[in-house]
Length: 116
Image 1 (spheres, rainbow, N blue to C red):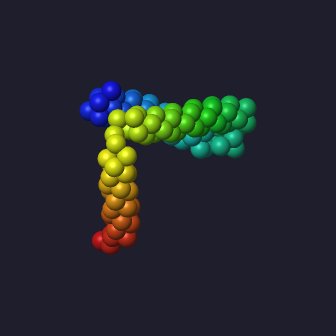
Image 2: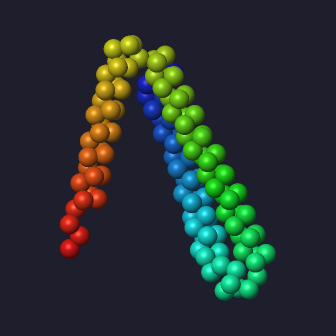
Image 3: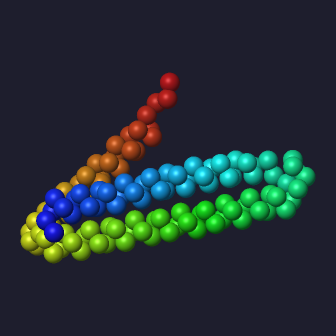
């Protein structure tokens, strides 16, 4: 498997995970917002508890998505190790580290911006 194939297959797997997570998160938001009225507003504690149980199940599914994403990261790094020389892999990790730190700095600046 070449680096281009690795990039393409990793991107496809990442896209599938992202789409699944987005759908699950929206479903979780819908479940929690319908349950946000609480048992006092609806008067039915059993319904409220049922909605909370559903939400907890969806959180467990979200945890599974995160585990799958971590496995994808590990597999990608293992494939990179097989494809690239030590020097190329080190350079790629340094570039990724630099990219990540710049992204964090940009995120911090964005959050600290004046909101007028």
